[in-house]
Image 1 (cartoon, rainbow, N blue to C red):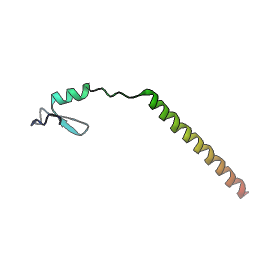
Image 2 (cartoon, helix red, strand yellow; image 1 turned 45 degrees about the vertical axis):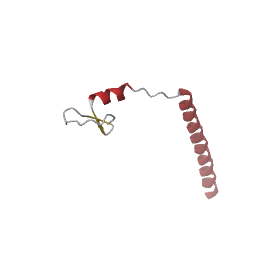
Image 3 (cartoon, rainbow, N blue to C red; image 1 turned 120 degrees about the vertical axis):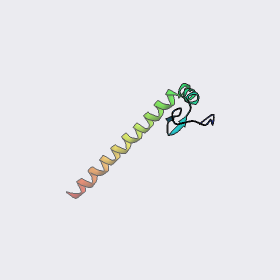
Image 4 (cartoon, one colour; image 1 turned 45 degrees about the horizontal axis):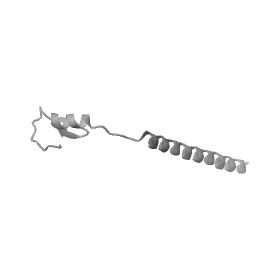
Amino acid sequence: MICAKTLCQECATQWDGIWHCAGCLGTLRRAKVERSSVLSWLGVLTVSALLLVAGARLMVWTAAVIAGLF
């Protein structure tokens, strides 16, 4: 808890595995997490490009191994 008050079972609310009083829970719910959408999209595009390249290389390698068997 943020305020370190003593709580009874009826007053406490569990959120993300931690017990909170009503005041602390209200503060946490109002807290706004700002994320950069540009950085998020760049991360998604980077991971997607890496997976595409890795998949293409795996397919080429697999085709070469299979062609060598026949």
